[in-house]
Image (cartoon, rainbow, N blue to C red):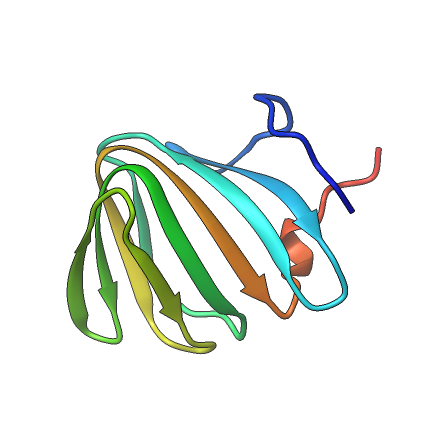
Length: 110
């Protein structure tokens, strides 16, 4: 699978946080997130390992009870079933890879 980046195809995951699945295969799914300042992801977990890269902005993460401030160029890996949350301190763009594939993030067939 090959994909060109454009502004189409985003869906709002929660208020202020939009996602676009870029590519996916048998074992991984890569998504791009646009996050508005002041939005947040509540504490949650899922069975998928999640590796992320902050392209722009600033975010505050709590991962397994530890607080981390992410700035452009920072990267993280959150193991499956680990509690984590995020607060968006500045307008942000993030790329994340999930393994195994998050079926809830697969594009909907119209």
